[in-house]
Every structure is written in C-alpha cells, then in structure tokens.
Image (cartoon, rainbow, N blue to C red; front, side):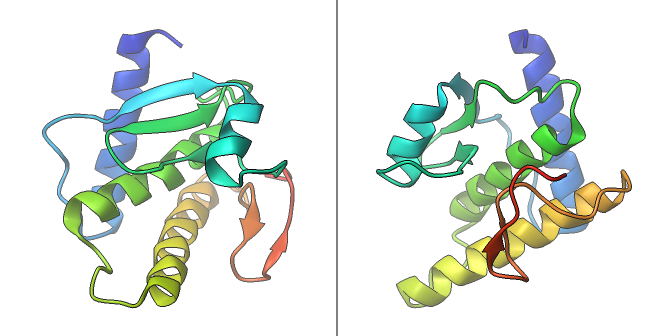
Length: 141
C-alpha cells in the first residue's frame, strides 16, 4: 500500500477508535510495517503462531504482509486492534493493574473494539483468538 494511502487509513482508524473509546487522536501516526509472517511470529510468540499483527511498544506496528488492509475489512480490523494497543500505551491505560490483569484488560478492550468495527460491516468474528470464547477462530472474518 502506498505510504499516503496507509497514512489516510491509519488516520481514519484512529478517528474511529477515538469515537468509540476515550482516546485522543495522536498528533502523529505510528509507523506501519508490512513484514513476513515469520517476523510477526518471532515478535508476538517466539514460535509458530497465528498472530497477524503485533505492537511490541514504541512507534511501529507490524502487520503480516499478506493482509490486504486497503481492500479487506477483516485485514483492516487487525490493524485497528494493534492501533488500540498503541493508543493504550500512549494513554498509559491499565498501568495501575498487575501484569496478568493488565494483559487481559488490554486484549479485552482491543478485541471488543475490533468486533464492534467488524459488526459495522456485517462481520461477526475477528481474526485471531476469539476473546469471548477463548479459542482460536482462524481467519473466518
């Protein structure tokens, strides 16, 4: 995807998140890097896994290069999920919680927003681990 198109997509997703949660839109977009799936696995799981995106802190979100974020709502929802984590970190959200509870709360919020986004397009299941069922659902979006 062209950098200008990706910036516009990210800006739109950040605006959507801001409208549906209590996050301010940042002055600057995070960098989005489309990388091979093996790199996502290394960052997210340190072993083979089904992760399609990861935000390991900082200002870069890594998305599986196979995702068509420009044309596929399910792929865009993966980016939205990682953008939620980016905003959580910028906002210091959940820092008052113990690490296990914080991780749970971060994922709950990110999956809830991702599912709300998908529901606007008539989709029911997000990519990745279905937070509510606790099981991997696969790319059934």
